Image 1 (cartoon, each protein chain N blue to C red):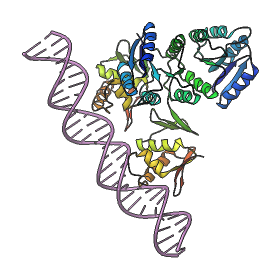
Image 2 (cartoon, rainbow over the protein chains, first blue to last red; image 1 turned 180 degrees about the horizontal axis):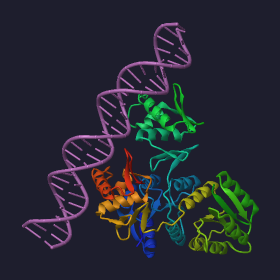
Image 3 (cartoon, rainbow over the protein chains, first blue to last red; image 1 turned 90 degrees about the vertical axis):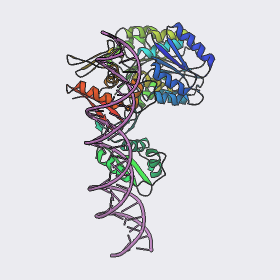
Image 4 (cartoon, chains in turn red, orange, cyan, purple; image 1 turned 30 degrees about the vertical axis):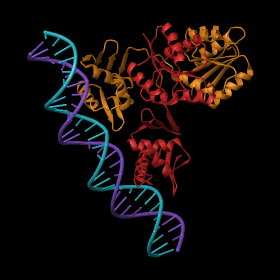
Length: 221
Length: 221
DNA sequence: GAGGCGCGTTAAGAAGGTGTTAATGCGGCT
DNA sequence: AGCCGCATTAACACCTTCTTAACGCGCCTC
């Protein structure tokens, strides 16, 4: 039997969804709050997740992000928000479909079937900058076809630079993102790791440029 | 490069879609009529199909049916009709998504990405990675012809690694899947079980590689 | 041209993560 | 009750990575 997980704060909506799903033979679990939903997901291993975007506390987008850190379960977003930007964001993060409330029950069930009959490779959020690809989920980076072997610090550093590829990144920005919670030490050891990165990048299409007194910039060359 | 096929009778719509798709790097083919669309699909083998429901002659539903007789290609339905029954019918026949005209271009592109990353059914009750076979149904694993005697925890661990064979699996991912519902303790005992697995795997074609600070990777060697 | 400043590079100690073995505790089985 | 298998915990040696420090180089200022 397939298992479904409902994450929604409105009790009425949960009841409606539960009825729908149970009529389809699903084993249904519920959570009324994001944090709790993640726990339920880890525990019950649902075959499909129905996630409301308008959650109190941990928001729907955030729940989806965290869920995708370790699971590729099909997720259908339910929301009252019909703004295109929101839809696109959710879909890009890894949602499998986006349905606007109010919705038709038959359509919802049909869309549930669709996202379950096609399971595919995990959606991997990644950053691309020229020949460089940074896979945030798997902590893998590759340049062209060749994989880079990076330490955690080097990876975090490359991530920051790649996110703003082509633009200057302040030393402060880098330090704050790579070593969060620390004083904004203008980077004694930053230079060392930049150096390591440069060596590993070699001269294969991207290079780290220094902007004296300001910071660094990832450049395609 | 991915190939897309547009089947729509309105020239203006085809031009709009072509522009959108080409801006995304697709190689675009068009058909203004159902029968013709099927021929194009057979000839070009597109990676995704955008199908209008309101076609003259051979209707969109009929096109989808015939397409599904021999092809698994992801299909996104475009239609001015917003009736639920129509949506459900299309989705049940095998459409992967249903977008109502008029639509937002960003949303359309996002939904295209989604249905393409979901490609390829993975209902295999069995995972293969080089000489390693993991039978999820019978909870058995074998390497070459020889069966492995694994404890439940070791099996769950090997399963996670084999599912993403060749790629890095984060310690978080492992812990969440092998010991669900627990705090994401980066595994005191994870190392022990990895050790046990390595011993049982021996040096018979697959090995577990550690990516320090990140996780593990199952590698054929 | 001498000095200061920022940066690149290298080396070495410190910190933290990992591999391995052994001991403990729990539950099922005889 | 006693045995056995497995999960968990603890302990320690080892290795990778991080940090710190030192030094050379180029550029700018004075």
